[in-house]
Length: 98
Image (cartoon, rainbow, N blue to C red; front, side, top):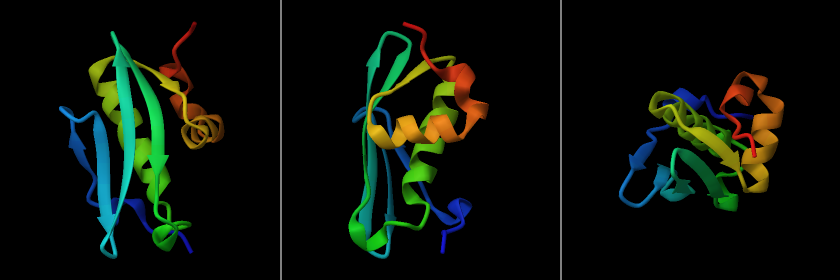
């Protein structure tokens, strides 16, 4: 069963370069770095207890949408974010060209 992502309250902490949400008392996070106007998604972490419910997807989607509003390109360095972008071609325009 997948959680309806809009039900998640995702917080962005630009000072920490982090998106996070809490579900059932467990915190999940996405960490990124910036290289000029490129967002590098470094890590997406979801505790096993809340896995399989769309949490990682919601975090990556929030990061990608934020990057879009900033006019940034994205480098999906962590395996989950790379797989997400591959499955969602609507974000292909955000991918950084090397």
